[in-house]
Image 1 (cartoon, one colour):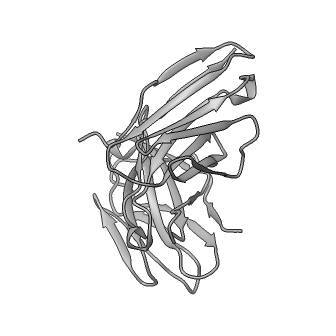
Image 2: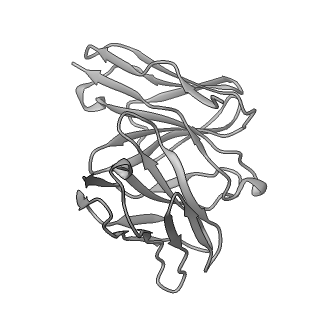
Length: 113
Length: 116
């Protein structure tokens, strides 16, 4: 079945550091790929998405490129802020009516001032 | 701008109690999901529903049941709560259909359940 593997945390960075959170997937066909973010005490919010190979999703300074050849969707940000401290989830879906999301285990990011 | 509402944010229940977690969406979506979130395990799908009175098991349905009597409401039921069901429960609702592929899937804020 489909699966998502993301780098284990926790990740601790200083403000303005470069962030990469790796995500790889196993799936048949052409899934859509997502990054969700969960701030402390809140539910999940969509951060960015890509629906086909070579698409780049971007939002709030974060970027991720759908790489079918390496089955990857790594999340990057050039300069993190304290407010980026959260748990980040990589996910995929095939849609087709049910839109079931398959999630990675999450990566906790802490950014120190 | 509320789209998915989970009525109970924090609950403490005793072992053996029957627990209801309610989720309401105001987007007229057909699909609704219940996930549980545990540290180091990510989100795991418990049950989902793609229409009123329709339900399907997810990856971890044991110990849970669901009810979908109205389109906007999807309830998760713990028939006899156990301590290993202490977790955060998230409701989600995607647009569904081929036109919904890649569209935003809305989550509720989560229900923190502690079973003692």
